[in-house]
Length: 329
Image (cartoon, rainbow, N blue to C red; front, side, top):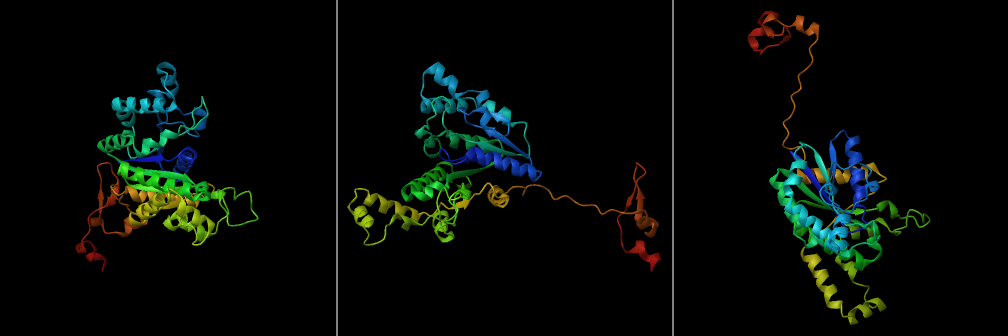
């Protein structure tokens, strides 16, 4: 059985870094993992591990922009539509991997040429049919798939930005319809120590406060009653929209986050164990029967009927019953 992990999320969430860390952790645990690059705009120097399968061998964003005159968004969509028309290429590339972890590093990154983030690229997860079609193809090929959606801990600094990330994750979950795990990345940049300004670059928060974000509390969108902010929100034209978002999250609590600190191996192992459990990793494998070791003394202590010789002249235990030990009583 083969397993596919689709690493998704907005730009800057740390998808490529997470993919590399997951590869390192798998190798440390003596497990086989391979990186699959689905970003046609990727820079080779950005990869810690050489991709085993690379979409740039089929098509690259630079070639599309040069030859067709597309911008980064249109070029990226064209690359994926081209891949969908040539799924036999991907099927052939995947054919050489059995019983392996395939980590798909999905796009949403800055283009090397313009150094700007293409804002429409998040639509590949939430609206565009590319990834759902890819998932169906992977399932047809017998791969168990799991989606991992990353948002960074900086989202906790802006409650509106955070809930936009929650809604994006929910939209991607509904769009792809596969087992799903949401991850809050870069938790090493959040601290509860007000004196440690270096590690608290993404905020200084108590454990109780962080828990409200890991298991999103819709009331975070509601300001304290009587406050100036609450009065402003009630008079805002977005007040009804915020109320609708709160109601949606309360009615459909689909999204929760696992904290990820890449400096802590236990944190990576926790995320990996959730991915394994979600995909039922290893459940199809047959248990290995352990044959107990037998010393020469054990052989001579056994009755002769309990020992048989193989065609190669190797002594091994025969099937035993009560009568084999009658002369030893």
